[in-house]
Image (tube, rainbow, N blue to C red; front, side):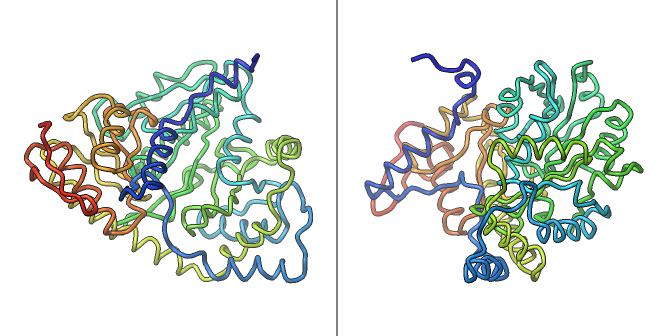
Length: 405
C-alpha cells in the first residue's frame, strides 16, 4: 500500500500502546489506576448545559459562521477584556473545534516549507508533530540548568533566519511551571523586534496555585492586536472542565484570521453550533466554577507532592498550575517509555513517558483524578521502584511481594 510519506512521518503517540494495554487490563477486571489523563472530574457547569439545551429545545442547531457565532464571539471579547486587558474586534477572533485546531490553524497559516518554530521543552506532545504536518521544522530549546525555566540567551541562540514563531505554554503542560513575568516580557520584546510570532497557548491560565498571578503576553506589548506579533490561543476545556465540548479560539491580527477562516472552511466548517452555545453559557455564567475547580486541583497537587516526597531519588519541581507534575525518575532508568511500561505491567499504574514532551527519563503524572487514586497510585509506583519502600503491597485483593530490587 502506497501512503503519504508526510503522514507516515508523524510520530505515533507514546501513550497509545500504554492506554490500549491499560484498557485490556481493566476489561479483565484488573484494578488499574490512570495517572495519565489530563481531565478534571468536575461536572459540566450548569450554565453551559442550560445554554446548549435551550438550542436543542427549539431545534436551532444548524450551520453557523465558520469563524464562530456572533454571540460566542461577544462573550470571548468580554473574556479577553477582563483577563487580558485587550479589546479584540470580532474580526480578530476565530472559534475552532478545540484549542488543538486553533494551534494547527495558526501553524498552517504561518508556515512555509522548512520554516522553523521554536518549542520550549518540556513542550506539549502535539507541538512538534503539528509543525511537521505543516511542513515546518520544530526547533527544541531545553534549559541547560536542569530546570524547566528557560533563559532568553538559550532561545536567541536557537533563532535563525527561518524562525517564524515561538510557542509558549504557561502554565505548562507537562511540567506545571508558570514562566516568570520577566521572561514573558523579554519574549514579547524580542519577538516584536525580530518580527517573530509569539503563540501563547493559555489554556491553563486560570488554573494557577498559591496566590500566584498569571500575566498575559499582551501586558508587555504596546502594539495593537493587528500590528503586533502576539497570538493567543484559549478555550473552555481546562478551566471549565469541558474537555469533550471541543471549543477553542484564536485571537490574532485580522489579516491572519481571514486566512485561518479560509483554512477552517475547507477542513471542518463551523465548530458545532450546539457546543458553541455551551461555551457561551460557561463564559457568561457564574465564574465560581473555575475557583472551585482550581481549589480542588491545588489540593490534589499538594497531596501528590507529599506522596512523591516519600521516594528516595525522585527530583520534583513543584507545579505552579495545571494538573500535571513532571518528576525526574532518571535514578530508576533513562528510558521513560520502558519505565512507564514497567509501572503499568508491575503496579497497574498508567503514567506518560517524558520522552513525549522532550524530557527523557521523566514521567508525567496527572493529579486531576481522585485523592484515593493519587495516593494509591504513587504508593504502588514507589513499591515497584524504590528499594526503601515496603517489600509487600496489596493491589486490589492480591498481596504482591517485590523480588526484583
